[in-house]
Length: 383
Image (cartoon, rainbow, N blue to C red; front, side):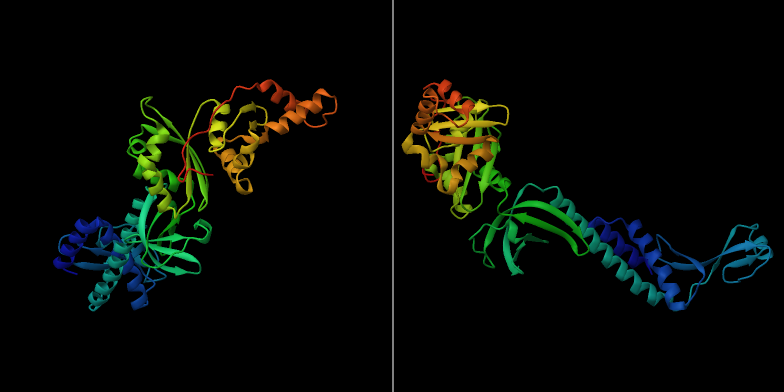
């Protein structure tokens, strides 16, 4: 140990942000183990490194006792008295071996390298843990056991099969935007879990693409997503002069198409949020036209009437449109056509109705006034 070693520690402190004192204390602790391992000593020892010169000393610690039974651990009262110590005090005797410098240098190197590695991992963990819920761009490094490993710089992101978009092809070298779901601490360093299916990815993409969303003028109220197929996003404007749907769709649909392209063609319906559940449900069923919506607070059920020719559009392929609308609004949606409601009302008036009496009565009271046109745009203009 010498002044050059101390200077090196000071340089590490400046470059890596690891305090010199922390490194020296770690080296001293490691040297105690190295001394015992190499010299087969059962003594209690203390290692001291001078903070300015780097000089190193090893001291055996012995308890001052009236009767010595183990000279390696105990010292007599007479020895202690020479140092001004009494029974019960600790007497330190220097036992630094002549060839301990080589062992010390090797041990110090190992400790410093390990501490630097730990510090770098800690910095990476702190950096990415504060970015949970954010979007990150990386390059696909390799595919291992169906997990896609993405190079994010000093660390890899892990895209598990559950977080991958069905049908999306991942090739090494491709660049990919992902959503940081979780940052885990592991023995091999921080592990960044990312997703391509999380609704948050859609939100972050619109924040990048739409200045009004980024600035907070347009607020994204809710998102429901079936990754790779279709999504619905409810937006609301804090400024009455700003059209929230138009801002997100962009001129000739350029903004929503850019987001759709990043998600490999996933269709995105942008609809206007409304504090009135009836209007919100009607909007959420876009692009289908809605005649009326009746809501039941108990059970949060919304009963929707649509024109006959719009029934299949409102329900969507395999029920997708209605399913996404239900998730978006948080309401259970019961969709019926005009003719179905008319038949139920006729059956009720003839005394033959055997279905849900409350439902039929509510449809009858709903009146002809439409609750919303559901005319917001989508990525392709179709369901």
